[in-house]
Image (tube, rainbow, N blue to C red; front, side):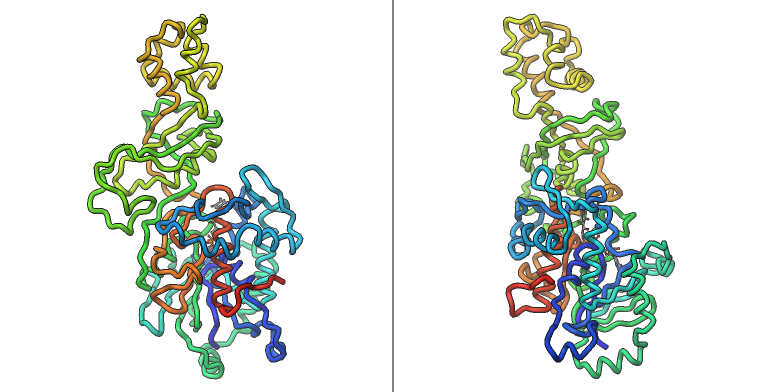
Length: 502
Ligand SMILES: Cc1cc2nc3c(=O)[nH]c(=O)nc-3n(C[C@H](O)[C@H](O)[C@H](O)COP(=O)(O)OP(=O)(O)OC[C@H]3O[C@@H](n4cnc5c(N)ncnc54)[C@H](O)[C@@H]3O)c2cc1C
């Protein structure tokens, strides 16, 4: 037996792909079981539960999409890569799909849309649709090898690594009814001889061989939907990258995105944990120190980076910031974190404007005839502990009790700079608290209209494994939906422009 598709990873995009496989309603197909209609899809999932990251998303409420989604919301070395997928399957279509399945939605600020009933509803819906359309799901899979029968390349797990033998069928007793049912399917799966006999009967070209949990599977197509490296406790790994490399694809060095940032020990704003306020964050490259870095090992400006260029600024975000025990978090920090490239050798600083939309120097100048002190004024516009820490760090501690009217221009300029241009170099983060991965499989060799590899026919990609990273606010899941859907359309009905949901 040869599968039409083996999907590696049953997370958001892998499930969405399988849920969108069209049902073949032709009379001939109806003579067969539903599992055989429209081609057979097998999902192989490492974890004992599908969609674990999806279940965590949006604090359990799943920020499914964003009404304002567009290519500009994504970091990708090729900025137009995600445009065809987003145009084909954008936020409106996703919302229509969810509504057609009675999923109640809630719109929040900045165009974010959440699932009222929780992330589990979305995961369960996708799982049910995938199974209804005949997909098989095998959980607790320990992938051992993936081989291209046409091209000869082969990915093999390293013994004792994350794909080592001890990662197998550990049960956490939390599989849903659907998953248990599909696990039961395993018992009536054909053995090796039947597999080979089936292959001969069906005659479809077996282009890939997958070895998992000691069993061999043949398939015409492969979808690599194994996600990125972010949030490793949900099962994230670098498996997808090593498989892509084995197939000859290049990587844009993966790095943590949408992550809180730890600050160095000498940061003057330590001790303000719990404080939250709206700020504007931006990234400043003080001096580019990148020497001889390969172009495909970085993103966000890597191509036009010139040594010695000073003060280059990237996008800024006016959003809430939260002080933590070790540094910063909150949307203003998470958004900006994705744009840092700590491995690039560039000296990148986080810049914070604590009084966005105001001009503190003008506020000072407007106090010419008043008896207000510097501290008195700053306390009116900023939390006192923060104001004191900022001005002390700028060496203005002695000026705090002085009347604003008595302050010279140099002091006023320094005070305004301290408040509007606070700069710090964060400690390089790891993936442990990152909600997404920036970088990934280089999109140069992936067809943006089909998600198919330009190097290996029949190899498809979807979701976070690719060098596409969404901003905070539902963009990453939208990319998982859009890319998974586009791959399904290209794979199952390349001749039509649309796939109906049922
Ligand atoms: C805490 C948290 C909250 C988030 N909230 C949101 C949100 O509200 N909105 C939003 O847009 N985005 C959110 N994200 C990001 C979003 O969840 C991901 O971008 C999205 O799930 C990526 O989909 P994917 O299918 O590419 O990867 P994943 O959903 O990560 O799925 C990949 C699957 O592949 C499996 N896998 C990995 N290696 C192997 C292997 N060797 N063999 C077999 N299977 C394998 C994994 O176990 C996993 O099930 C959040 C992320 C985190 C960590």
